[in-house]
Length: 270
Image 1 (spheres, rainbow, N blue to C red):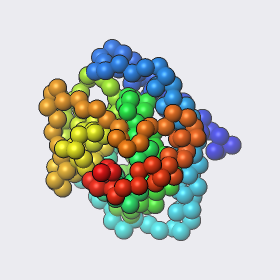
Image 2 (tube, one colour):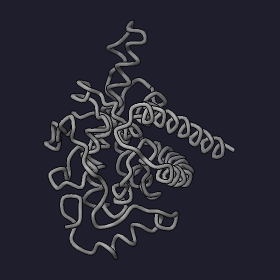
Image 3 (cartoon, rainbow, N blue to C red):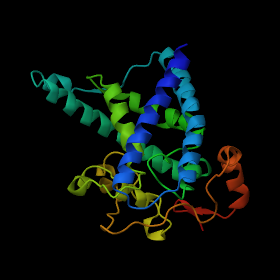
Image 4 (cartoon, rainbow, N blue to C red):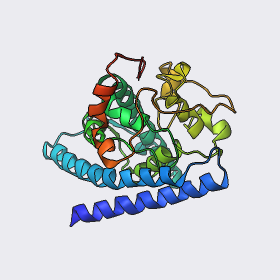
């Protein structure tokens, strides 16, 4: 029952987010995305979401069974007594940036050790608010290489629901095809123009802009590339097409090995 409820909540939440991004993209488009491309992405999500929920629930319960407590608790809350709602907002930002730090390094690891799986995500050529799907194996890798390390460093304020909601919307927005960017806000936060560089076919953009929420880590670790206002590069992978069917979506990591047998370099095959 719990599994069914969580899957239903995941699907409903995603449907609302997809609809919201679709409206924004239709009101302020930067490029037109065909209905077939949108429908295909939503169909792949219909498989990915249940798998994501099952993996997160199973791995979460397994990790909890070990009873391992955080190694470091950042004392955010104790310094914000009497701040009211501002305390929650500040705590949410601190926790989200910590989460993004672990995502940043997990993401970089994907481009080195898990590229054939992550290539499913990078193969997408029609990026839009509903096309940020990954291969169904990625939740497992993410939990082991990101969620577990992140759980060892936490804050003393529990705002998981808030963080999950905000980061979930951010993940969809950064793939959107809308002309609505963050303006000066992109100095700190990732928008769709900044993240599109990460998916670019242009070699100048390879291995750039790994962060999902904040640009801070890219700036600190030398992987930031700041796009010009009119810079909107073609995206995808030159060596393999994006999946068009459920079978291609599921077996692309296997086909990637056969169809792109040359040596990976800079996150691409050359």
